[in-house]
Length: 169
Image (cartoon, rainbow, N blue to C red; front, side):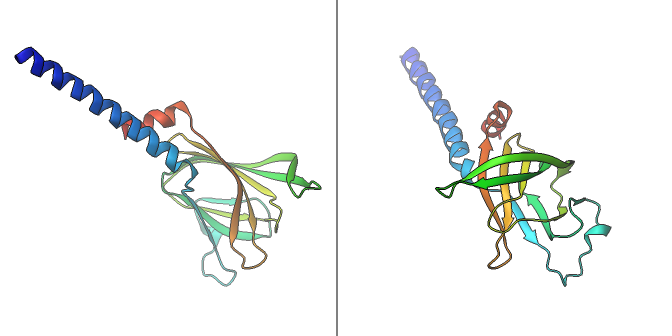
């Protein structure tokens, strides 16, 4: 009698653990397309002077000033200048990519950036390694309509460390 109850409780425990793993993997795969990186454009008449901030990257002397932050924290930011060619069908083809700057150990702080962004066609690419070990690559450009920063070509790379991190957390 007790062996049957013991076997049933072992089977139920194994099934609960498998459902736990499947649930965590499903949540990770579902949140893969959620962008946790936030950009805030600093208006030209703002009292914020990015030259006096601790975490500052100045890529170009003139251009848009904005703040980058992430809910997960940022381990490493690499910024590239990219050049695209527009094909006949309207798609973009990457011609060149030049590394401009790297910033490390940002954690949950803000990064102030001054960079000349293109309108309509992206000229700047970010490659971010977050604190949860995921690697995100995307292009940004400034909207000519309202001045907001737009993201395109968003790519999320789930590393093995990131999968283990999300399963354990």
